[in-house]
Picture 1: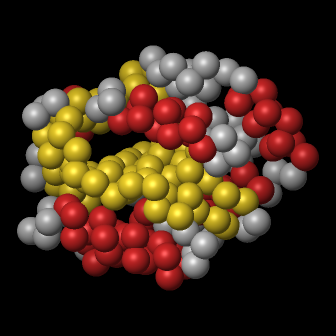
Picture 2 (picture 1 turned 180 degrees about the vertical axis):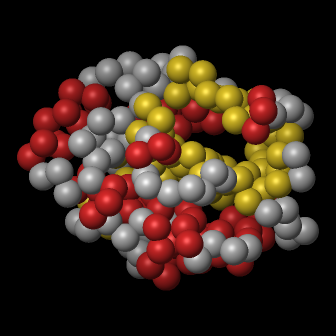
Picture 3 (picture 1 turned 180 degrees about the horizontal axis):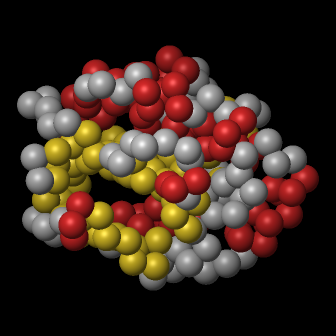
Length: 203
């Protein structure tokens, strides 16, 4: 199981006061990888089994009184209530190993362009990880809404992961959704991330 309490996750949360700290929030994806690494041999075997599972999505998630909804793979469950915090603007979903995770953050609105925020995030990720590989940083249209998608391969604690971050506006709030998946098979990870993103519905 994920040992959330033993990792320095919440200093990132407590310091989040405005959009200037967006990159600290999204950096949680790196910490999720670290949490999985803490499980040693218990992590690797289940991960291999999970890799053989279908990447099809189908588990519905509804947030913000139904204004935001999407679907997740069946092996991912809500971990938000296990993190020991009263913060209600962050939702965390992961599989049993912690190697597959989806983090949703709803923050204060901003007048900055989504592309500017994504570029800033990319620069901050690169400052943490010189080996960062950017797969794509692009504007996407999804069911009538303009979003910004930043996909990259990130490294932390000797592990690599495929990270897909989607930025958007929902009900006058900034939405940040980060999907973190094992990077062993980049094509599989990219397909899984796209499957999740394509189920996004913003009211």
